[in-house]
Image 1: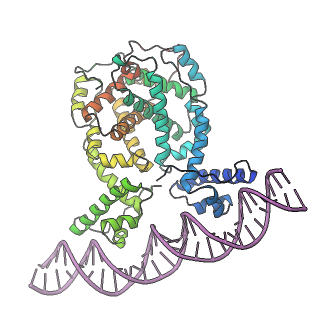
Image 2 (image 1 turned 90 degrees about the horizontal axis):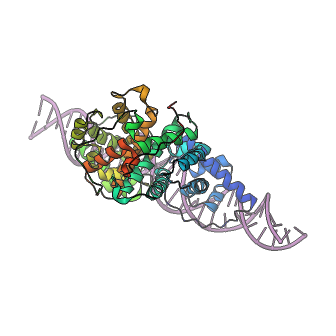
Length: 216
Length: 216
DNA sequence: GGTTTAGTGAACAAACTGTACAATAAACAT
DNA sequence: ATGTTTATTGTACAGTTTGTTCACTAAACC
């Protein structure tokens, strides 16, 4: 399990020695997760490989989880610079956004991290964090300029469905060595999600079910 | 990390002593995962709580993972009895299927297991197994009676998107104490996925993007 | 060059793991 | 019912990992 850390930074992050140590430990963790899976990696493993004293590890991190979170935070700080809210009602804006760096560019950039963390060697914590992030973004985007009374599915459900779909797509992508460009993936996701599976399958018209069901 | 087990069952599963022990260990594992998270649970914890000798544990299972897998297998054997392949082109068949027990009934039945395993206390192994299962079912359903030349999105992508969407929906559901019935959830999923987000948001018409992109 | 701060290596108790073995208790067969 | 088989038990053991302490060295800073 992975617990949310309470950092109590004592060391000065500007000190070149500290930077060296932190980078070494972080990189080594990822490399070892890739080899053995997160749970199987011991602090001994990390410090041995990184050629850092085990004492030094405890000088910076409470445990393995804290080191992982530090890495995750760095990656998420980067992701936050990418995401832009787009008005889905404006086709021109959507097209422009799909050409801008998307989440998929971010995944591509950190693909080795994502590949490990979203595999059976990873931990649910990372997955859940991605999920929560995407659901929040989706929800915020959808709620924008939407008429609540015309809503056919409760919004939170829709947001989590859409977030799950994106993660599903990302997982297929990274497990097949990124066979499409990030722009292609973003377009696939947009098209399939917005228009639905009937459209994606090339069906002329979606058969409507007879009985109705409201969002409540 | 969770490794795929190679069981070498020595004990006779019909022996009442064995059944008692296995059930005790399995139930205790779930209870402890709920309390401390999978990784934090030790074999000592399990055997102490279950009032079973630690020696007995090793008589049946190589390690914690093997015990988890045994529990997962039991749940999946049950799920396999539920899933039915439905012709999406036949609205009557779809309606009938949505009234039959669906995946959501299965989740409801084992909700405590799902809730734990799909939380930060779980492990990616279970998530990936659910994902792979759903993607396979989705793919098989979609491929049935579909015209490949009219396909607008590559099928595997579509299947993994749909599988991810279902998991996203399930996770929202179990994390909000099942506020809808399984039938409602199945309907939400079907409607939103098949018709797309434009439809779900109640938009009259989906704006089409100008530039086109093929599935390859 | 002197001071501050980070990193080191050794040593420690505590906990968990995985295995072995002899003893006990429950289930089974006839 | 009795003897046999099989599961479970308690104890013991060596090997790891963990988290901490402490005196020492090395690097960075002024």
